[in-house]
Image (cartoon, rainbow, N blue to C red; front, top):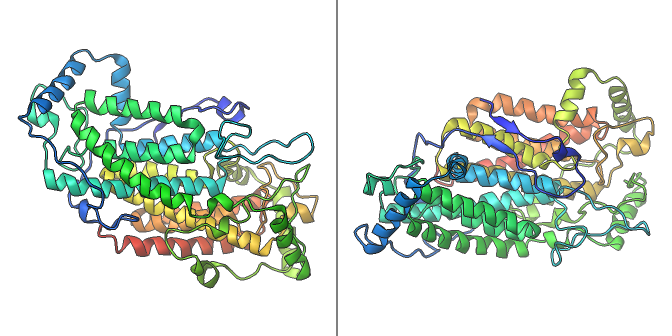
Length: 510
């Protein structure tokens, strides 16, 4: 099924860094299966589902509860068209909508800084996010990490929430008060704590960390979400407040991890960049060089040191980093270089379409975001519960973040040149990424995504594998990767995805 997407071309062309909201029209979330026992699933960072405390609810016969149900009835008597629009937006599902908001933030912030008058390049500063260049530059590794932290935190928060839902078993407001109309379907059979509020609160806290300059926008979305749940008859205010307590507490654990995972040091220093280059020269190979004018510093050369979610840091070098690419002086390298030139010189319409479809460059939500969009469109059709939405996206996005880590480790370990650097006849219309060639990021992301999505939805495995191959091939059509970059990248991504599958088989959800 395809859903309506409305956006302006100015989203792709505007120079101003603002948020162009993408309005996706989805059906109401009405899960086939409620996953009421999800409170027993294995969390990611929480030691147990009840590690985070949640106060017990008041009686449905209490003055407070009666007052809060009256609040819903008053809102429903005087509901405006704007409120109905907000309710219709959020009834598609909390996890889906906050993932969509994250993709909007990534696309807005996916702009490389322009050079200073002296030819140097400024670096975004998290301590001063509003100064130019505003923080962050949401490039593919940063985006993959952002999606992972959001989805993993949502999952843990919902596992905790479902634990308390099963404990308290509070009926929804419309079940307690027949005069209340519910615009939402219950995804768990219990309204306390509100799963929507849990997702909202944890998402707000993670986005404030990851996109601090966009806090006002995120807070506005949160207010709309709360209004939708109350006016729409999904929750009383106490349900919301309990969910917020859980969401914020879980977010604090993920924020603590994020502050110490090594991403803050991923930019490196000029001395480190030069050392990487010289290590390749010492081996008699041709090192990667920036093709921009003036030369731009390499993108996040130490991202390979970031702490992964699915495996240990030591696994990167011992199990996941691939063998070296063909030597730049070898016949194989020359053969692959010539292939890039011949392909880019004779692109047919289908190859051009594929190249553009998978470009995912500046001002887009990046290759990891593209796979989030693909996954979300398929999950909508499955009508799964909120907690299963969160679990599936957590598995996908931890795979994508960890794929970025392994890919970037490989890129800067081998420091291999791009085709255009070696052969000036090669031209690209999709931009030239400012980092080494081997291995292909698109291919690694796509290999990881197709592996875990094929596990989650086996009936779609053929489609996912075909899409991953197409995404990988698109980088040859674009003239920015050799065949070995793409084939090895897909294989490495598949290996990362296998770690996610291993976790999925042991988390208690199946």
